[in-house]
Amino acid sequence: MKKLSLLSVFLFVAAALFAKTTVIYHTSDTHGFYYPKKGQGGFAALASVVKNGPQPYLLLDSGDFANGTAETKNSKGLKSAALMNAVGYHATTIGNHEFDFRDAGVEPLVQNLKFPVLAANFFERKTDKYPPWILPYRIFDVEGVDVAVIGLANRTPTNDDKTYKFTNPLSALKKTLKDVEAQNPDVVVVLVHDGLRDEKHGTQSYVAKIGKKFGGRVHVVLGGHVHNIVQNEYINGVLFVESGCYIQNVSKITVETDDETGKFVSAKSELIPLIVEKVGEDEEIAKYAESLKEPGMDEVFGEAAVDISRFSSVPEHKDSPLNDWIADLGRTAAGTQIFVHNNGGTRTDMEQGPVTRRNTTDIHPFDNGIVKMTVDGKFLKYLVQKSLLPRSLFTYSGMTITYRNKKGKVKDLQLFVDGEPVENHKTYTLATNSYIGHGGSEGWPFKKIKDNEKQEVPGVTIRSVLENGLRTQSPVKLLPTGRIVEFK
Image 1 (cartoon, rainbow, N blue to C red):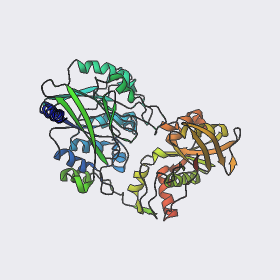
Image 2: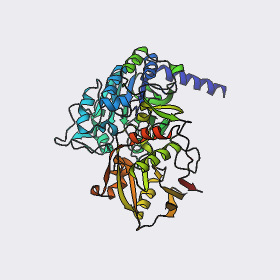
Image 3: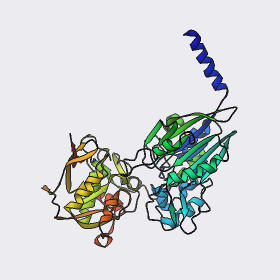
Image 4: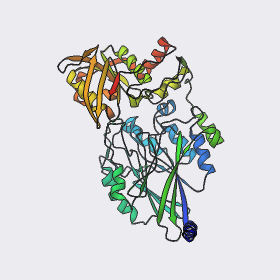
């Protein structure tokens, strides 16, 4: 045993001597969160990590950098482009929120980036060619190691696009891989704005199939979109990594290649929390980020008596205090029996203490109005049935729900409005935010309702409803949950 142990040590040391290490850093869904929150996150902390770590390196992002805070919203993403340039990103891909400012906002946003935007499945409708500011891939020379990075854009933009189109990502990857392999890179990375598991959008993700179909040809997949954290997960030898959101963390991927042949050997990942006390902040980036702050964001509308979370603290309750409160405000503003609030639209918790315009913008950064309509009980049951599992996508005001989860399927579903069971042929007035109400993202069931049957509530947005609620209800207290209950 001793001889075997010594031999193992010898082989390990020998392998290390003939291996070359390449470092890749990864972020995703930064959404304009330039500054630390509660001592964690921000571009200055990220810059400190990458500049004080191994050199050289690649810094990659999986998209959704264009919108999410006051700075991004008011600059149509251009401040994000400027800050990412300053930090020194090497490449990104296109997320769904890069379309928040519609087709016309995409090109100026991308053209202001000083690094490539990679999207092998993204084309102009008129020409069937890549836009001149898009590349399907880029090969980077990282101290003698050729790293090919292939981008795959998200296919569900937040606004309908008439200028561009998206093709099947797996087909685009297959075609692009042939072009990439003709150049004999050492490492192949896929940068994608989709996640390995998507419980957030009610859609089945294709990302795992990259490993199943292209293992041995693709080495690392860097994902996003669903705000998950995934580390050191392998499918068919392919490493999958996701880094969460809001620049709270950065993933450090260490790739080993054979020093003599250049061939890929292994890859592993490490999540680095961007805790400012531990990692520090780059002074130049911190100063630049501070200069980008939007004025007028310190206006106080009210206060929260306690921290009010967008997540439930009771496992069997699938609604949360913050989402319940927002849904109640929406129902009052719309004057309907029911309000449907999409949980994914609530981006941060409401922290105890004074609540400012920056806080309300962070909670709901989108300029969604409110639409109301009349629906029947059959539609309500359909909406709820399609949105409860694997996790509840919506919170409701004016309606309560009970159900059982039987092997991933909704059973014994019961809906109540005003304490009475919902009846299939009875009609109910319902409101929701305009994005969801017109079928955006997880709101796709609302496409069953004709647009001419939907009425805009004039002069009202979700954020104005939040701000008015703070003015009239401060200090905001914790609401009891239990509107959506899963029975065992």
